[in-house]
Length: 353
Image 1 (cartoon, one colour):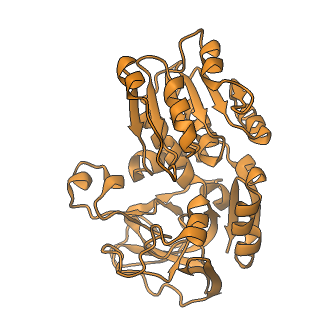
Image 2 (cartoon, helix red, strand yellow):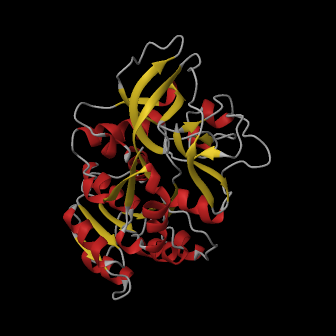
């Protein structure tokens, strides 16, 4: 079969590789219908290995590079292993790609995204940038009727946003500010509205992404290069500040603004991953009793299943986020290179193997 294989930094090849083989007990094989690529894939391409094991195999998957990329995908079941009763041939599914030990302190508390040995398909095991993929049924969620594979491939980033809003403990009518209008930020905006937010404000320097946020129902979209974000948000909230601020840009400089923007007693959820350290004014946090919470990835039955449900019933819309659909053969030229060179006009790239 054809697959996109990470060999080393700056060396991803679309090449012929063996098919996954017969599924083991509790496993299925799917024919991949669509797979998204994101910033993590680009970072592994240009700066990796970051998560991909190179010297020693991952303890859960037993795999190391070369590995097939792709952790945002969906497809059709074409083979089932012994003991599989929840899925049959022809079922349409999307996998929550996290692999966890099930035995550590965090797994026993159902915090599987914090597992000591956490792994993921597409990074520590073969993923969905291929014609076929093998996986455990434990990570599989059935797709609702009518949900296309290209939209289902966004269940993974949506589940990241769902978790961030869940960690924000949003209350009905809450005023929410989202910092960063990329894919995660736009999905967090929609998730906040579904969860009952009264107003949602988007902070984003790119005009096209501010307009997209308005199309998705933002009350106001703020350009941080032209306005004082903290003062503008206070003015929009009658001098108080947002109840919840979600930092989704990953920009280290935005973290301080996000914390300053939240109201006294408010909550800040950090879901973006800054690539460099940042300073923090702890006095402001303590004196205003602000809460800062980290949010990592997703949990299969809480966040991923919710994402699939919201996509299926139309509460969250993702088609405007898809910048291009392309065949696997064009992954590098029209996919990763586009994400790298045309970031201002590219959100989600969908590959159809």
